[in-house]
Length: 549
Image 1 (cartoon, rainbow, N blue to C red):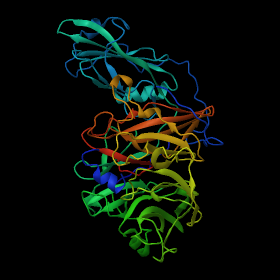
Image 2 (cartoon, one colour; image 1 turned 90 degrees about the horizontal axis):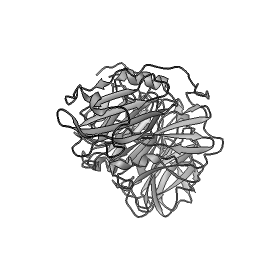
Image 3 (cartoon, rainbow, N blue to C red; image 1 turned 135 degrees about the vertical axis):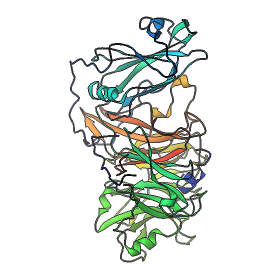
Image 4 (cartoon, rainbow, N blue to C red; image 1 turned 90 degrees about the vertical axis):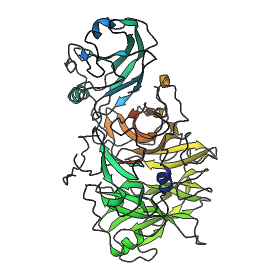
């Protein structure tokens, strides 16, 4: 592995079988509601409107593409006839990308995957954009086609904020003619947003042992970031990034089949896997304590003299505390004494036990899940989201988050957006365990509370004949930056889902746009670079300094 590293710039980018260790160690219509007061600040893209263009581009070739995969016949164009000819329904179902999708400009090469009715074995993919001189017309005998990387890069740079019409037709080829065809299947539009999705995603996999793997949004392959033997541990559990992207923090357990009990560990994400030099002897002892889960950090408390990590710490049944507490640890501590090197954040007025805390980027607030049915530091059946002030390591009064503290639901896994304006979380009916549950869905809510928005990305395309709840949409995390263009603020979230198959969870990305004082959500984008035979779950999304491939 190369030792050279990259710092990801804002503009340049992008369970079930063995999930026990992960969860025990941690775990196309838009929908609208009012955003938090003041809206989101301009991100990397500033506040410039996308500039309309009258230019015509030739990113698409003037002649049809004959895909050699599956011995596509060269006579295919003549078999399908003019665009739109044939039956208007009964053709292939496009599952990737989902119609109505919105892509970041740095998305990996556009891939088309569809499910064909029995007997159909030859297909036409047609893309049309107003400012492209030609349509892209592809003939293939396969059910998956990926646009060449250079072609996609040009399209993503040129055809921004403009609908691209996608039409899939199919037929049954008998060696000389197309029987009963062509037949149109999925037809609709996709769009490239005037914004990139920054940073890198590092996720947990349970295939071939627990490990952390990662990639940027535009990478076509994933790579190892950390395996247990590289961290002197048997199991790697829940993880996060330090605010500078230099280190991965994770729950490290001596039990290879379970994430408990765990300690708080850190390794550099650059491929060298070094431990931080700023961790003092006293702090190293505190981090090594057994029973620590889910380490998290804040950008506002990540500098010399104020370098703090939060975690969930099992308090050994002390009469003073509940089973777990949210604790802070001074990573430069000169003393291991309580309230000097570490301490418990007060949660005044909270009747439950805490799990899954998240630290706001501005360092003023902590959001967490509270319930009376907690187990293992991460699992519960009656969770509600609550917030407390950080208050210079003291904590304070606990307040239920309106819209995400409904006794009708089990709400858990909260995460702050990069500007702290929004919280993403997972939700189930009350009484249902958060552990590996197919009915889990992803929601967002203003940080100040309000109406929770169920994101459209929970739903697969209707023609796929799979529905949510029922496909385990879980563990949402936000991209490390937002972009504001022409009054619209673009956010991105990642989450895991078993919508492709029930056996292996996979990662997805979904855009969320604040426009004209409203929230609009879009279908999920499948990250096709990940291995489909691995259990990919619990992503963290930040400016990780992962190695060059």
